[in-house]
Amino acid sequence: MDFKNILVTIGNSAAAVLKGEFLLRLGITRYFGKILYVFFLICLIIWISLMIDNTLGKVEKNKNIIRELQTTEVMKTFELERYRSRAFTGRMLQERSSELQESESPAIKISE
Image (cartoon, rainbow, N blue to C red; front, side):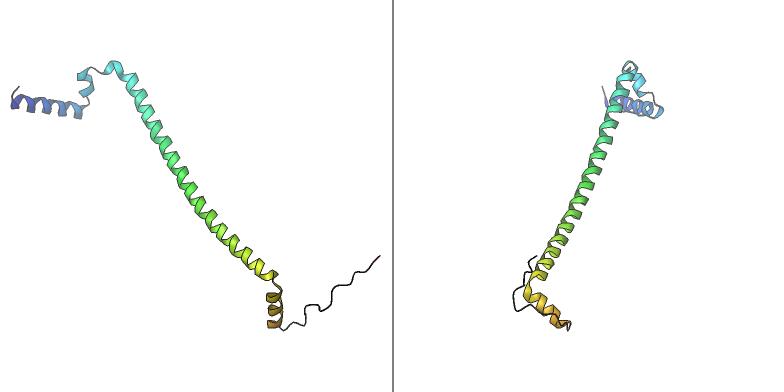
């Protein structure tokens, strides 16, 4: 084949593609059902991939939220532990001009 025949063949093929006759010229009409089935499977795979990607995005977002909540929990736990300290409680009462003080004698148990 010479160069002119190759160009004519490519031109005819391009015209057939634009007209929608390319697959008919190749005789692929007998495989039409299988082509539709493969197209359906490809669409299904793409759809499932998008759903998985969406789910992974939600998982990452929720992991970030959990990290923030854990940080908040640690900060609140530290603050609660600080409030348990007798020295801190006494200092806080003094700052607020409270008359409450720590007992100097142990508690008395009243028997019944």
